[in-house]
Image (cartoon, rainbow, N blue to C red; front, side, top):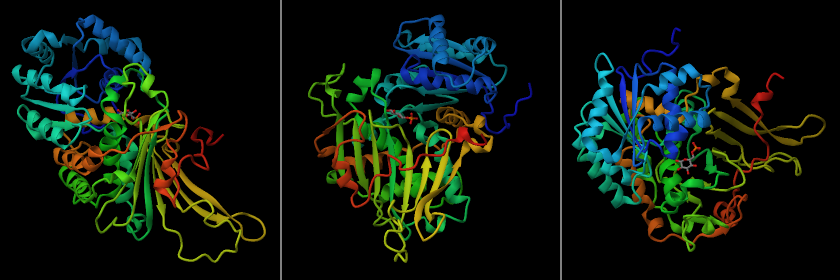
Length: 488
Ligand code: BG6
């Protein structure tokens, strides 16, 4: 079969992946299926995966776990032949076997390649829990020719992030470290950059003169399942806002970088973070769904938020005075991931009373951050027939329309590939994260108490006061056009 993968998208050398946390939730849901696809589709010139975890299991058991993970979570078909080939790449070393055993397994994997290879250490565990494994990699002499991927949340406040960075730097140089934020690997997140900087149409109005406010809204219907014990120590702000939502905000708000390269992009993102005003606890609504405290693994008096909505501000020339509203939470009414940009209304209306102008809010540009991008631009237009009645209409784009939908890489796939290639563009930096913790500290030091909300709702009622006189864009008044109905 001739590969249709362009030669420059994958790494140059075969890769030995040391996957720490190999039997955990993330590895099973995303990393093993993702690596399967990357290997199987020919993105990587050769790959061996060594699973590592606290579980005392052997290679065959790990292969069984990987197989059932693929069956359950792979979004692509796994044929028997594909599975057999992938299974051959899998090995396992329990953490308790120690540095020498891990080194031996890595060397054995490397010997299976003919020429040079590289190592990718993927820490699929919270960063604080990853440190013993990081030290073990150092002890095993596995730092050379390697890169390391760190998961989130990167610290719980500024002091812990600084200390985490310092301990990581004892073993790995900064240019070897890839702090992952999978939202940045989503196609639509990268599409924000394309949309803003590849077109002359929108950038001139991308500022305080034309934009009234911005919403980044990521409600989830999910409950916590097996992650309850972890989540209880983290909460929605650390799990989603400091990590994903602020990163998306930076793509949305940054100045044009001097080049589409890692350092200039990081610099512009970090300037956004430096311009952010410290978060004022009075601009924050923390919520907890009713029933959370009686779930297994949860403190019956827990003050952990399962929901958060907040207003933040970027105090620079482009954005002064434009509020950014962020919201996310578990067990909400719908699962959505949108960025919605509300434009200012015209200075004066010439339309007769009752025409409907302005009745459905301002014009909006909306990005849907699902794996397959969607975008819509809503505006007022005339309803056909006599008189002048206005309706809210929209122009919509869905990636499904393009015929390229099969080429979409899942966020983790894209980021694993980039880390293997040594490309930092879509990863976060130590400085950026430390600054985000700094702007978060007023909230972390004086968090407002959690308010209860009913599962299946949109969060506590106080969210409406937070955004008034504007309104939350979700739930949508008009639904997205269904791409599957196109042409039918
Ligand atoms: C993870 C959070 O990073 O992102 C989860 O820890 C959350 O709590 C998930 O559910 C959402 O990611 P996605 O890609 O499903 O939107």
